Image (cartoon, rainbow, N blue to C red):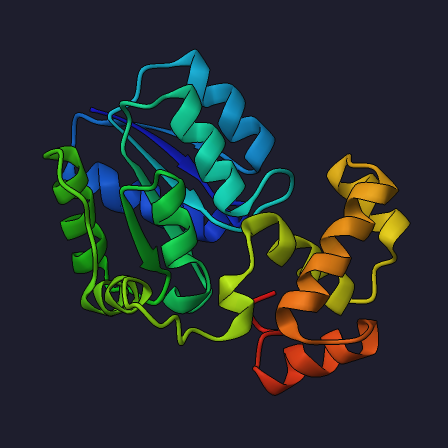
Length: 211
């Protein structure tokens, strides 16, 4: 059994690695600490399961899941996050993740998720199942920020923290024009006028702890 484990917090990473080794004594666990390293290791080895934090230095979020899924399509991916499930669960599952757990989950639930994914099944908690069911309704009553694309939401995060368009462009290795387009689009979708409105929106929806 071979696990690839990614988390930029060493204590969290070591704890999960120890849990896996205790439950699977003959397994090997390869640890990495950022998105770029995760992508490199994913294609170097043969893995039974990839477990990754959703927010790390380098490539993060649902786009990281999408790239992993494309690089190693047969390998199940379990995403762990300190964010509420409604923030990222649906995005990551749509991009190719096989399961999503918050870091508040018990060790028993983590092992249950691992066992489910190793057996070829998905792992969906009741909370995530409710979110998925809601997303299938004819009338999309999700909050407006949950209807943004992954890239739009990523730009939203940076803007709400005060980053300029040029700073975001450099961080994401995209052109200023492209970031400006994303900004315009997300302002339209959120029915907002400017960056100050974005900050107020984030505060009103209690998003700063998850972005």
